[in-house]
Amino acid sequence: MRYNFDEIIDRTGTSCKKYDGMMEAKGREDLMPFWIADMDFKTCDAIVNALKARLEHPVFGYHKIPDEYYPTIAGWVKSLHGWEVDYKNIRYVPGIVKGICFAIETFIKPGEKIAIQSPVYHEFKMIVEQHHIECVDNPLVPVEKDGDIVSYRMNFEHLEKLLDEDKSIRMLIMSNPQNPVGVRWSKEDLQKVAEITSKRGVIVISDEIYAEMTLPGCPEHVPYASVSEAAASNAITFMAPSKTFNISGIVSSYCIIVDEKLREKFFYYLDTDELEHPTIFATTATLAAYREGNEWREQMLEYISSNVDFVDAYLKENIPQVRFVRPEFGFLLWLDCRGLGLSQKDLISLFEDKAHLALNDGECYGPGGVGFMRFNIGCPRETLRIALDKLASAVRSL
Image 1 (tube, rainbow, N blue to C red):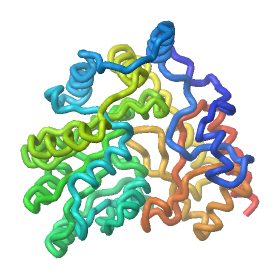
Image 2 (image 1 turned 90 degrees about the horizontal axis):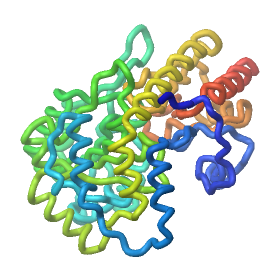
Image 3 (image 1 turned 90 degrees about the vertical axis):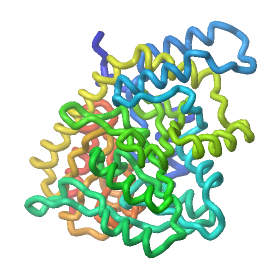
């Protein structure tokens, strides 16, 4: 069947953070939301129908994890990424950010440090510092062509030097693929990360929440732990159907750990604190997504890809001062607004006070984000057009 991603759905009044949480997040309610990373599309029919069917039974008591739950996840990972995983190496976690926190609490001792690679998802730095741990940066390097940033690469030389000079760095939290800049990491990139970190006893946390969202025509996602024995030996991988199938509110994340020592220690932490048990709705939604949702997923990605093309054409014609790094996955655009010649404060004012749009401030992703904004285009085309018209009008007023 064909799904209608042009349908505009009113999400207000549903305790939706993206809309109903605007006052709390931005201090005002007159902004169109393009910030928090969920989509405005109706969730896949297969998931909705499965949840409705479960709701037909009037009792919601203690939940036994279905026998097919972990084997289904393992089958999905193999079919999508070519990564063969023993389903016994998979464990539910109640959210990827929470899972990373659990890994920090399990493996990092007082006085040890954690590295990140900015510009990167801002919660990495936040949760490290909230654990009273020093966060060390291994910044990405912009790749330019004709004066435009077209991609980013890892700085392996800097990473090696960082780890050699500071033996207290015991963990690297990596975004794979990289949010917010839209870049996927190649097998060779990940093999190099594994070579550098495994030799130095550094654990790699690989946040792969966007693994299922490779856009048409782009190279497929490569799971970090799959690239070599060295990677498998130091990897804790986090994945979820949440971004892909627009079910973030259901909390359906899981971790995969190949190495026995890492797995036993982390799973013991989860089991001891009873953190590893999914809700009825998490297992129901995940099974429906991975068994029946692929057609919806493929059509959604085609629509997102056409949204990327639409924004590209619109900016070139109407706001040539603003560009973006063409994403290889997902529904987030890393807008390069430096051509407007504004300070970061004035850039935010342009979007919020003049265009009345709520985006993510690029600076929150690290020093490399100054002059940038993160733009969520997971919405109907008409919504996107209205937003870009507002932005064009605001730019003309400068």
